[in-house]
Length: 346
Image 1 (tube, rainbow, N blue to C red):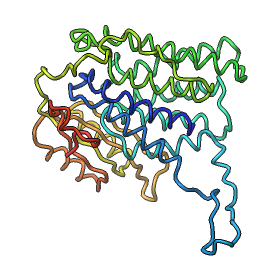
Image 2: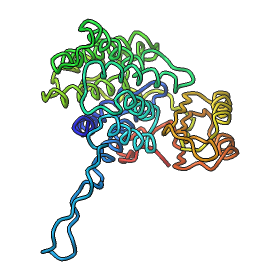
Image 3: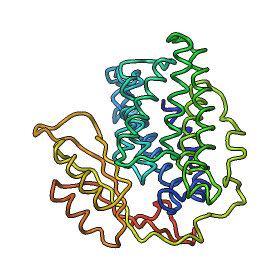
């Protein structure tokens, strides 16, 4: 799992500019590649922080090395992914990053307590993840990374069913091959599912990002190289193509994101009110445990198509004290040099 997220971080870093270049849905803000990269980076780095199992050297160079007690969670695939998912959720960026964080947190659940991946577990994880991602959005739309998640999950489930739940490494390899193959077909199909993509003659940027992430999983588990021809022929992904949103009218709206502790009732009310204020509303629990007052921590994302974030921020603050609150312009500077590594957040 560490190898997977490390590969995904490197791969998305290498492809972020091309993903940004074809990003026109839900708004032509040209930051899908950046948002996915930063979110995956947060997940990957969370797995490389010092833990109790590492050796601690004393002040005296001659003193012996003292080892902490072995941590069983370090051999638990689900626990490792859950740790990465929480970090991704806390630092999720944009629509695509938030949906990936939801995907990662949900995928960890069926893997909890298991020390290795298998075809049945992969099928269960991908299915749980795609369902959670679809339901996190108030108004999910086919032709996006959601469709890629769904296609991969269905393909893995078909392999698992055809092999009667066989948990061998061979069947796991077949399931991973099938999942990535189905993801490719789903990405190609996005162009025909959304009018904006069809008119621009491009595939969905988030879908391509999700495809790359899934191929990184296949590579990490099977010990094989990434598939060099994976993106061949995807419309709009040629390196000579310019950023296609350059000549599109800018979106004057804002993206508001935060983390906040809410009761289930307040969370439902916030989602309803945000749906009235804007779109691309995503709400998902950061972790599954409630605090002493019965509140859960939620990651909140919304696009408000007005130049003033005041009403949305006031609504959020009326229900609790948000953390990691950010307000970003949906329209990006058309000069790509104006975008630093932090994207367009202000």
